[in-house]
Length: 119
Picture (cartoon, rainbow, N blue to C red):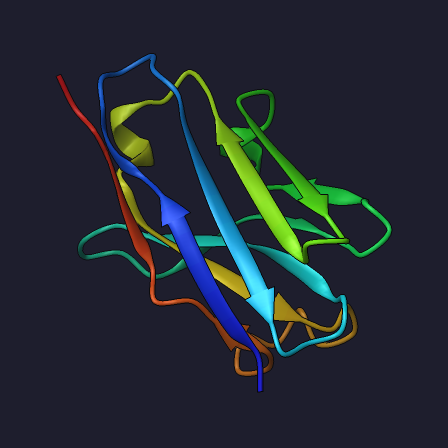
């Protein structure tokens, strides 16, 4: 059983920055990342990082978001810069094996943290 504890998020003005952290416990080092879900929308992939540090981002956040990890602490950090109102959503941390990442029914999810970008 893997527990994911998210922190960060909140309210920020357009163009501002926020960081989200996710700590995993009860697991070996796996692929971790973030999804987000805005009201009325389906949950969408944002970014992932493998245990070797390879990253993948959805096109809409490339150049603005950076995902990093600390394997010693089994944590990941999503640094979000140049935030836009359309980034407003509940952000969910996920842990899964790399081979299982493509099936969202596999792995584990955090409870989510709200990010609101508004003036």
